Length: 283
Length: 298
Image (cartoon, rainbow over all chains, first blue to last red; front, side, top):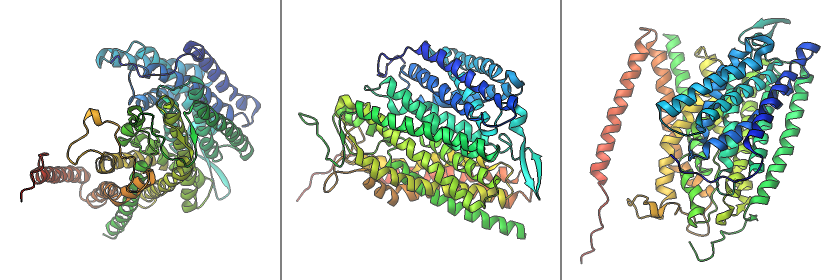
């Protein structure tokens, strides 16, 4: 398994993205704690931004890992990232204010075990496997924790398992109407799993460019924020959810337009309703 | 007794919804060359065959449909939690999920095609304009019917799972049914017909997909037309049967014994394995391995 699939060279070094991604997502996720401090819910959208930053980092990690000839393994990398991450995130969430840090530690341990299994038991023997799976598990944990915090306004477990239902004018607290009880966490899992693998899966090939792939990663992140913002109307007050929706839509439109411009830059030609251009000399 | 009759009615309705979902899902994914037809569409420009086929590689069909249906179900669940009528909630949830699907489809096509610039494959922007909407329409039918089916299971049959989780499970099953049943029809009967029938696809012919139609150039809408005729209904029957048998065994046999549905499930699997084996052997005997055509005498 040492066939290299071609990816673009150059760009920002991976380690730099790793540090920005880790620190950025941690800081942004802690900004949602302002909700608890100030007693409002307006800071919920920072959870979504943490997920966007984490997805940027995760995309670059997948590119790094999948350059070892894992063409069809790109979507699977997304699945294992979020699969390990969701365990770390939910375990971390039970620890109160330490949640993001504990989530990172637990996810790193799960990722390391998965990496050791892949390299030593399944014998895939990919040099960056262990490090990459640790990174991916942390990215998955931050994505789940970020989007869940965006949906219910807090990254604490109690907030994720209690929701309010209005019965005959009385607000009643139930488990069924919560982020975890209503399995919104399953939607977040899939949103993250597809978003983390899509950018590299969509842009792979000899003409891959790092800025285009990362712009697509940000686009996927903001796109995932939109449905979470809509779902959050069921959990948090109207205005905070509206703020979250506006932030996601504006971020999505900006990154989508930028991505189309970058695709236009890299494309061989940009044609509208034109016939097949046969290559010179024929096929 | 009345409860069982009611349950069987719901089972039949869920099976019918699943049949529509399967047909729409396969047509959608074939128009977008998702799943296994994707490898040849992706390879074609590298072998010098420039084409006008939509190449929307989001992920394999099961994970992709896992997301679309779970998302539709999650949004519908949230709308229902906001006291919106279930029918309207499912329509709105499916519409928003389709919006996400459409955006993923466009970014996948642009990304893959732009990365193939070295081989001279241009981005045909009219493909995006005309085909994304068609895939979105088919995806809407698939998502709406599947979410409606999940809602029926919960509200009428009393399934204990919340709607988004059931959506995730059945979405993955839907994608798997379409991927396993419908794609071979499209791939072998349509995409690789540049080769002689029965010749297989040798390495040297990789990427030599059908690019020209009877008149003019072929695009993915023609493939959708083909899929809607054969692969789509086949996938629909497959997914419909899966849903029908799954619910039927529980509704009918749970009253008798808690182990009843499990035993019936194993029997159903065995019966289908025998039928499949019989069809395979019959097809091999009837159509046989590829032989050189006999010279025309007289």
